[in-house]
Image (cartoon, rainbow, N blue to C red):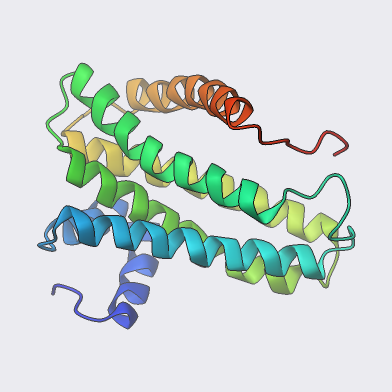
Length: 195
């Protein structure tokens, strides 16, 4: 079944937690134009910004603290991460013989970000229980992110071995993170230093 409404994506996201390849196959089968994908990417970014702002408001750290990332900086970081991440998945996967295309890479990154957004919603409730619970929930989200990325990249590019894909993700993430800091520095964005 191809999802038609936004509510159709929630059960698919839950299924993707245990069967990421099946979920991605369904997402890749949805006919879409690149402009639709870009709009979906911006929707996920905006929803992430709303969640981030909510977590900032309800956290014990004051919103104007030097360790809080300004909303504009967060928006730039998320946009560069989402669209840059799709480019990296496409290029690095293609370099190693992958068969995926750029639209598929964009769908993959948007889909994984959507799943992670849904997983972070309970963190807002956990924030009332204490920072230790939030930290444990964030570790769980990180583990799911790595699992989802590995499985979906393997599906997109028709890779069969897990370890090379996992090391490719980790290596690309380090290089991309350094490049992201460089670009943010060029844009004059100041990140908090007192964390």
